[in-house]
Image (cartoon, rainbow, N blue to C red; front, side, top):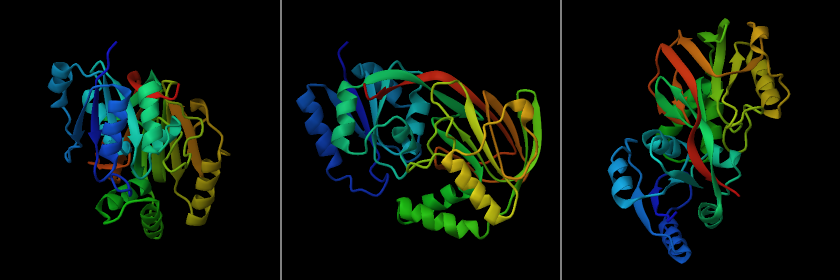
Length: 300
């Protein structure tokens, strides 16, 4: 099958200058002999206008040069198109690319685009909004909201905002239903992970897989802050046990389990993020995995 690549470049993702990125893309793709188009990302995140371009131009691949938020928005709009997606990671966290071992160097990422293999992976929906990797309520969502407003991007900014918010961190009240389990708990945050990556090589859900048809749910419950830090470190290290749903009970520490779908009542109206981007919160959240819903080009 002949290929034609549609590149979407986010000029403000991450911290690195994008001055030379388009030049590298154009030079490498011409050398590979593949026709291509280049567009900039859209501030509002609505990429539905690409439907007609994909059909008229016979596009076979949509490649996103940006972070997890841009990837999520693009794939969410074009998930029903018969195309392969690719990533040139240049965001602040790049969790999805890290999970799939896609390198950050544009030249190496392009080699995967040209020579890699496309295979299907899961996504999920949060109140019908698409997510490719991670959604969260509470503390990490507040950090994500502040991060978007910060004048500078990058890991250092994220760490500073996390420390700042930590001192004012308070638990929120939630009710959860998954399969035959109901749970009411206070929690500093809830992460719903499709990938084992939090971003920047932090592994919030060590058992998560992009191909298992399940979501990993990590709840850091209300407790003193010293204990919360220790429990988060245990989770990042992979020491907390994955619970079978019949064993889920309110407890201090971390509640870690898997489910195909989840209902959350957000009683405190805590903030929400989807793939690192601020999202409008809701009192009721319906979350459901979308098995093998899009094809992503990965190392062969």
